[in-house]
Amino acid sequence: MKEKNYPGRVITHYGNQLEVEILDGPLAGLTQRCHQKGNTSRLVTGDLVTCRPGSTNTGVIISQSDRINAFGRFDSGGKFKPLASNLDCVLVVIAATPKAYINLVDRYLVALRKLELDAFLLLNKVDLIDENKDQSLQRMLQIYGDLGYPILKVSAKSGIGFEALGRQLAGQTTVLVGQSGVGKSSLINRLGSYKSAKVGNLSQTKYKGTHTTTTTRLYHLKNFDLIDSPGVREFSLTKVTKQEILSGFPEIQSLATNCKFRDCSHRGEPYCAIREGLKSGVVFQERYDSYQNILGNLD
Ligand code: GDP
Ligand code: ZN
Image 1 (cartoon, rainbow, N blue to C red):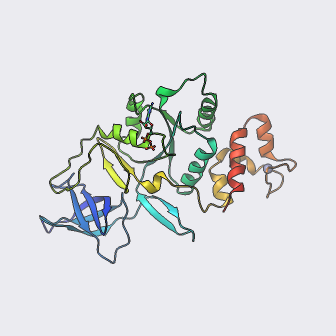
Image 2: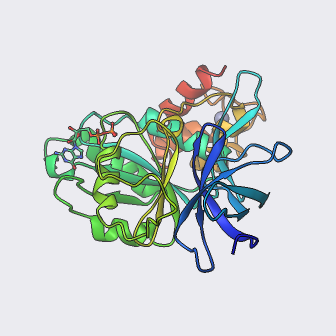
C-alpha cells in the first residue's frame, strides 16, 4: 500500500504541508498530510494531484493535474495569484441586511467574468424580507432576473430554500463571495450539517461544525464540495481593463457595437445605442450607472 499512488485533491495548507483527500482506491475519503517536492509549482486548495500516502507519516505529492480554472487575485504587478482551483460555480451572496448594492454585485460579476467563472446570485436572510418594504432589493432582483442571472433565495436561519440550494450545489465545487455579514459562515455551517464525507483515521483535523475562516479550506460535504477562503471572501476588483469591465455587462456590450462612434463613451455622443437602450428600457439605468462608476474607478 505504501508504494501505491492515488488521485487526491488538496484540502488545505499547513505551512509547507498539504492536507490531501484521497479520491479513489481503498483509502478513498481519507485525508493525508503530504509534502510537496520543491520542483513542483505551488499547489492551492482544490488542486487535483497524484499522491503517495505514507502508512504512518506524511505522504508525498507525485504530480499535479492542470487546473480547469482558478479563483485568485492579481497583485500590483498584474500577476495572478491563485487561491482555489477547479471550481464549478461561485455564489455571490447578498442579503436583506446588510443592504445589497448593485454596484458591489456588478464588481463581483466583472471580476468573475474575467476569471471565466460562472456566477449565481444567492439571496440570504429571506426570513427578514418584507416584500412591500424592501423595494430597492426587489428592484435589484428584478434587474438580475431579467438579465438572466439565476437567483436562489434562502434563509440560513430557517432553512428555507435549502432543497433548491442543494440541487444547485450537487456534484459541484462552489465558493461563496459577498460582503461581511451577509451570512456566508451561517450558510456553510448549515450546509455542513449535511456532512457525510468520511473523516478517516489518517486525518488529524476534523470539521467541527462551528465555522471560522482563517485559511482556505475545502469542505467535502454530502454530495458537493465547498471552498471557503478569507482571500476569496474579501476579494475586490483590481486590474481590469475597459474591455473586461464591458464583458461584465453583456447587455451593454452587445449594444455598444451599434453606437455611431467606435470609441463612444456612451455619455452623450449622438447616435449612441446605449443611451437609446436606456430610453427604451433595454438597458437598466442602475446597470448603466454601475458600469460608468466601475469605469471611472479604473486603476
Ligand atoms: P458572514 O460574515 O458573511 O460570514 O456572515 P455570518 O454568517 O457571520 O452572519 C452574519 C449575521 O447574520 C449573524 O448574526 C447571523 O446569525 C445572521 N444570519 C445569517 N443568516 C441569516 C438568515 O438567514 N436569517 C437571519 N435572520 N439572520 C441570519
Ligand atoms: Zn454609445
